[in-house]
Amino acid sequence: MRRLAQGERDALQPLMERHYRRVYRIALAYLRNPDDALDVVQETFVRAFEHAGRWNAGSEVAPWLTRIAVNQSIDRYRRERRRRETMAPLDEGDHDDRLGSGEISPELQAHGHELGARIDRALRSLPERQRAVFVLRHYEDRSLEEIAEALGIRLGTVKSSLFRATHELRRRLRGVWS
Image (tube, one colour):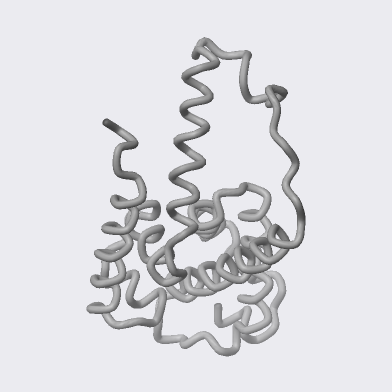
């Protein structure tokens, strides 16, 4: 990071190699779309390069990159939500290419797709901070302290956000597994 802060472009490659997968997992868990997640990864490392001079040399790089990735994911989610609100969705038919070529019955695949969509909607319905805390805790397996550091919020705020997110997801998904 010190080399990057001094403008050495060659320093970006090792940084990306070390943190790419984690940043991608965060973005994917937050956005639930592989293409959007890849865009966020790219945007995260561009921001890291542009703002390397702001990085505190006494702190870890991973939480700093995590914060950038979460913020980029939130921005991407907001842009996509606004875009979806202005576009009329197409009707879905029985032409989904994902159905059909496996050993799992079409009914079970449809149920799995429906369940995934329901979980996705429930996750997206959470306020941004709650969603970020939930994703970092349950998709990235981060400790509460790591989440607080990555998001720049107090530990108590992390705990209450996680509690509220979990409670709301349980409420919205009630009856799914019964």
